[in-house]
Length: 144
Image 1: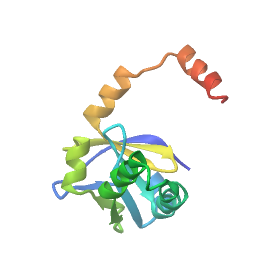
Image 2: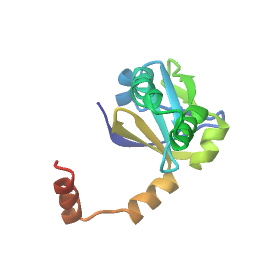
Image 3: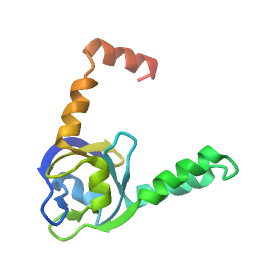
């Protein structure tokens, strides 16, 4: 299970180091794609294939919104190799989308990783910080 939060950086060649805790589960090949909150998602290949085959491919291609959703994920997805040092090169296009220039935050999100620019993550945390009672309310709402 991919959980936790780590701060690191991206080098001049666009490479980030995958935190050691995540490397085994992520494997040596992964898919990086745009996420909905202007961050990036890194999916282990098996999880990505399950998402595509179990969800995206089951959408009706007669539905314009379904086609748009499938295109959103498919057009921004890139397959990358993780090198022996645990580094992953992220394309310029994906880095620009997420606003990643140097410092970044890597977050385990159960079955995938999220990659945020440090500035965007700090802004997100500040703007969406929830009190303990609000968290408890959400847990009740979602039956957790």
